[in-house]
Image (tube, rainbow, N blue to C red; front, top):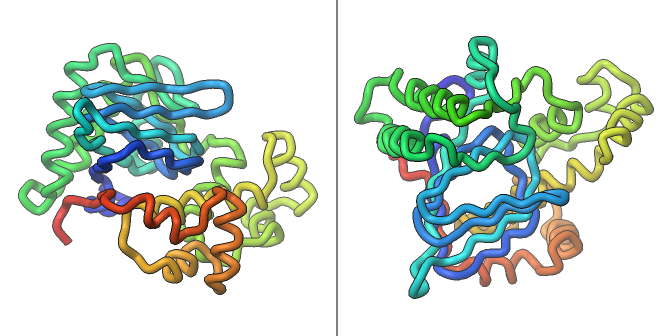
Length: 274
């Protein structure tokens, strides 16, 4: 697939205990299917609850409160995630635009059986891309998008997203960059005052977006990787471990090391070979 490496498209989340993840940024349009347990997404005054065998489509550059719970008899929570290249979304949106445009999350209940069959096929290809023709991963994701439209929805065209989402996407591409309001305003061809005004109209600020993306990425890395805490801090833009710890604790109410202990036993891995 263009844009996103194939081995970054598919992931499986496994966790043996209830997992309150706080606010999590979903950076690109994503499909999620719950395999075991239950998943709850909350945002603004809304929420989406998914049980075993149910799917949800999540728009890119969104932030949710996410809670994963184990299944019966303490069976670990399991879910599969397929991330879509925004360029692919743009190309598809020029061909068909039927149903509602997803601005946050959409529960896929109509034609769910057919969608899940297509999702299983996509997981099988994306988890072992080197065992299949190079063009097949893209076709499998396009098939998912077609079933999504048949279910009554489609992803946002990435070219027309609000300013907040554009900025989130840029920061999420590399949170370690020293992002400033001045630089971001220049990228968007406007003054700092105009950038601030537009973001205020969208109910946020540049600093809020920056911190949210960095902290959400850090929380995900702490819970789902074994990277050293200091390395995670550097990767999300903090050159001092103490500054990273202070900001993280202020944001979530726990230190990074406490989150790492709580997440012991979690697995969030790309199953595709290197």
